[in-house]
Length: 526
Image (cartoon, rainbow, N blue to C red; front, side):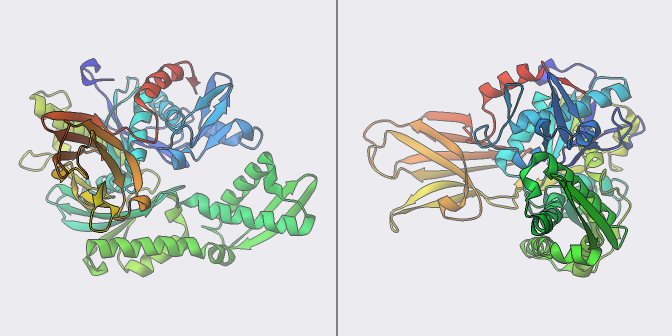
């Protein structure tokens, strides 16, 4: 949906597209962020899809049927977003779905339910991603929102959104906040600075394949091993048995946050096992996961060149921060007060809703128009009338592969370094590697290493060169990194220019997006 096609009356929302749960929020007429409940009157929606013919059932009903019909279920799709169909896909009723398409169905559920609740169409959205998501994952999330029929105003980092939700009523109190975001499938730690109505990202690190599911898997594998020892059979070989055991492990984990022990009973192939698990035993089994998250906290402090006494508050977001061992670790490590006035499950979507309205307000200022209520504008403005400002940084280095004559090998030159404020625009000139080159081929990578094989390839751009050029002939290269942290590359040489978005090796292509948009219209999301 292009800006020219947007209706004059616009409603913007914030969407937390989570690994295990998702949420949607909006700004009410008084300028307050509010969660929008789904059709089942729940404030958060399980990110689970059940395919039933031409229907896609999303949420609690799908999750409840996971054991009965595991072959029709999709969950944890956020961990796969950004991959091509060749790397990840699921097939139902003869149709192959990419991670973007599956994610779009979850967003559609949130959008449809919110429209019914609010009684008006939703046109625009800000969608959140883990701060440590790379270019392909961010682009794929943007596409998922578009496939769901939304004009995606912006893709923002989850910790930034959480800091917005926390800091909205604290903008007069300058402070530095350490955001520890441990969700169902991803983990981020980010240092944010709230300064004179400016929320600024200082440093960020994380692991987008570390989350609550990993704690669940520890219990699942332990029970399966014990079952195998007793009965000589592996209960994980059957999909229905695995789904049942996963649900029991999840329940046990939740119970151990409020109780010191729990019991797990699992049956498979006419045999059963009953095991007792104490909180201490569970924490010991998962100690390596906690140590991993602790190490990332220490890394981000080093990257920011800060000491813990420079942190004013710790903000815990994500459902896993309810676990006593997680809270204890963060408390012992930081020795800083914890902000408990924001819900771990809702902070990200509430902050995204704030960013969505800020985006519309900035757009109004640019166009010289006023559509949103005056109360909303005043809620997000300083005393001088200026709007709240939010600045993110790059969480990965973006580079180009070059040739080193002296070492006779390729290396990565960093065009945009990690922790650079965005949006940003960088231009550099490079020489051709040899004489008489017909094309200048630019290989774009993402990562902190100078070794190309240790970085993530993002794609290739090239431009045709005039004949008979000597070695070292200049080629201009421009990297533009927008507020969504999506990269565009421009290659210029001798009056010729190739201005293209990266031909990414991951996610859906432009042609596939057009086809997927039409295909998803045939699916009823409930």
